[in-house]
Length: 240
Length: 240
Image (cartoon, rainbow over all chains, first blue to last red; front, side, top):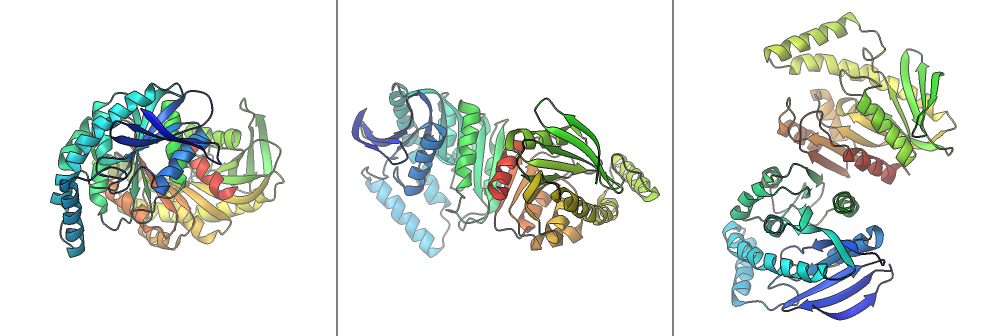
């Protein structure tokens, strides 16, 4: 793991970019005590420096003393896109514009993406947990599809906040039944691109004994800011 | 308003019983500064000293500095039951035991109850807001049926946490569309006596621009304790 930049931000948070093999990432920390870590997964099509993701990461670090980290998934952000990535994105754009169903395209795109992203998260976790500024249990905050597989294969992740509005391939929906970690599941009540029932069914599917659905008014990108605090307190309850 | 008892509890909270005409109530306060008030409505069949209600009220006061108050609804707790109350309770018990539908019985029972309880809450509010230890906006935390009507007619109530699992007569379900105050709506995902869809529809019906559904696993009486903190923080955001 190589740190490639370092910046002290005005909220006192130390922001460092790193690379780990092919994986580019960012780490946000504050304070001098070793802190529990929250992995922040970006949503599909976005990247590790998406402004709302960065605001969330800084808030976790500045207000709650967590360490927070984000990486670019394969084909996202600073990473090269394969011909297959480009093809899938083009297919998706075309289908959305034509108002055609996109489930098959997403299924063919998202499952391989998750299968590449999860081992990278685990490699990143190995490297981050070796740092003296990080210690203790780990949380995951991000899209559901990646989170399901990560929760299933990575015992060091012990609590998760999922952004429930997003396509989850059938294989992963099935795997969710075996997921047992405590979770908070965010839903947007008026998502433009998604009916309510599949999202409610997704929440229902998790095998966790402690799981809470937080549903807020508004469209896909309208999650209210107070949910960042609710998520941080959920992590504080389970990671500290 | 007459205070009839006064006790300093081990968490530092001052607990006082009062009567206001026919209405018996309890007030919990802490600290010396005037505090925003939370009205706590008991659920159907329960009363102002139900242990979980008292725990919630004391937590609001001890941990968050709110004043909290509960009163017995007509026919509940310390108050006499009318022949009609007794009849409705007997009908309800019989129908539940026989596994018959209870909607008509509840409708005939709950709407008149709400219509008696809401003016009493307003009278109580007048008296409590005249006390020097209470100041500022008011929140309501309790059953949805009473809360809808109270929110609609009482402009001093400016935020509400509703316990969403409970029968709401059709008249009040309609009125919910005119309710616009910020609200947090608690749902138990596995309620023994209630399907999910009517509760989701109830949440959907409110006219509020800011409303959040918190759905937790477990049966009717299984709301997890952390929701008390979530509710207190919601009130802190809106009342302070």
